[in-house]
Length: 219
Image 1 (cartoon, one colour):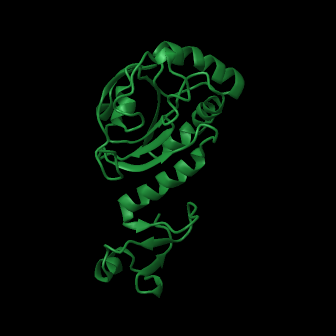
Image 2 (cartoon, helix red, strand yellow):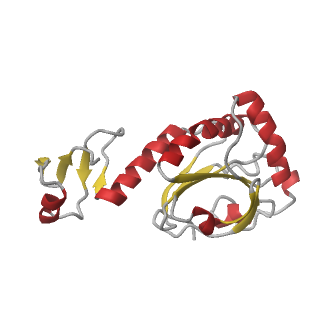
């Protein structure tokens, strides 16, 4: 069966550019972003890894760790890091998982369970589905899953926006409306009944419909 939002994020042990990790242990009490790419030394992913390195301090402010993955070796990752720093102007500052047996990609439903062959012989097209982003909470459950085509660079600013939204929901039981940005009004989730809402939001709310209760973003 495939993975779904709300499922436990599969745990694994793997070699990374920063040593061996046990994934759930590595996450600890933090949030985590796991993002994958189909092959090292590919053009779109080179831009993505550089941008993520620049954005990492913003994730850190939100108690969120970042980790990358491909089905190439840690040695290839380290060689690729030089190209990324040279072309993108930022050194990769987060671990990258070497998944040469493809077991992590398979456990995260990014490759068919029967996928096989030497990873050095596999092309980016063979691994085209290994283009996903997962947001994982401190409870080790999947909060977001997005898979992109190889030709489309990912919008990591959007991932940051979703992380802000997920953290607001976890802390304050609010949801965020369409195109929401940090600091804008939010919506009380339906699971919070009016009596609880009055305790949580003593200044009240706007309600154009009973099910649409709008409040300022909690601090």
